Length: 129
Image 1: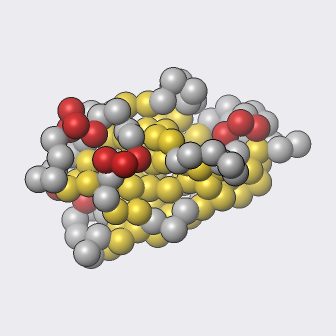
Image 2: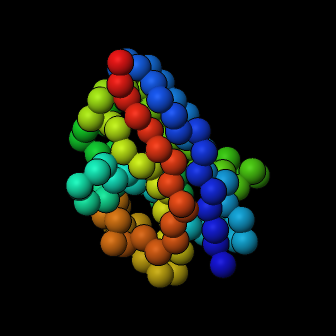
Image 3: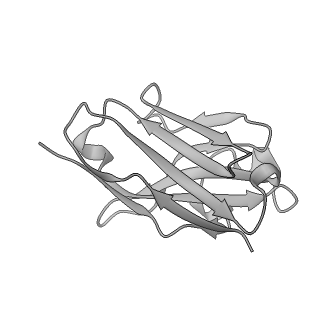
């Protein structure tokens, strides 16, 4: 069973940066499409950025040019580099994954949360002065 532990969240001022990490255990991430998602208070979970098993990336319009998703397969870790943070980026951030045999990349490239099966516990990001 694939499991995740996210870290790297915290309090940052507007314009600042954070790097989130998501360490996977139980399975190799080589055969999973992965993504970062967030949920703000009173809002539904939304996709932030997703990456195929072949490293094709998609980004939500609201974070394009500011966030970068990456993975280190040897470390079985997914990262989200967040720059130029804004107060509206405040949310709990989750990593998620779906096995390549469960869904092709075109099926999950939209980064819709309901297309992803495995989830971490989340890490809080607060952007405030």
